[in-house]
Length: 140
Image (spheres, rainbow, N blue to C red):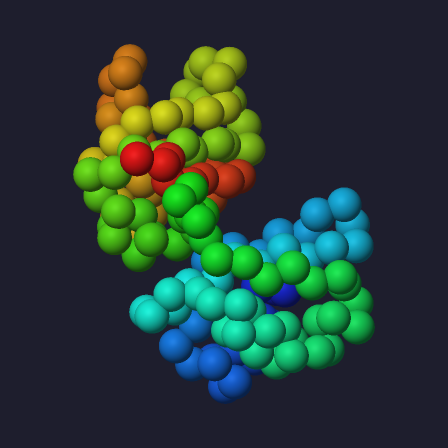
C-alpha cells in the first residue's frame, strides 16, 4: 500500500468510517483516482462527501472518486478472500516464474496473508502480493 493510500484511509476512517478504500492510483502525474466501496453501495452523494473530506489531497491532485464497478480492483488479502471462486485478472510487476508473461486470468482459489492462488487454463499459479502490479475481478 502506498503512503498516499495510507493517508487517505486514515482521513476517511474519521470522516466516513464505513467507506472502504479499494485502490488509490496516480494517473498521468496530476490525477489521483480513488476507488471506494460502502456496505450500502456507492452513490454520487457519498463520492462528494469523500471528495470534500479529502480537501488536502485535492490541493495536490485532481481527484476522481469512483465506485468499483463490475471489474472491482483487488488490492488486499481480504479482497481476494472475499471473492474466492470468482474470475480475476492478476498482472505482475515482473514476468511470472520463468515465463515471459506478466498476467494470469482464472478463478481465485486461495488467498493467504502472503499470496493469492489462481487456477488458470494452463495450471494453478501462486502469486505473492508483493509481485502484483494490479488485479481486478472480471465481469460475470
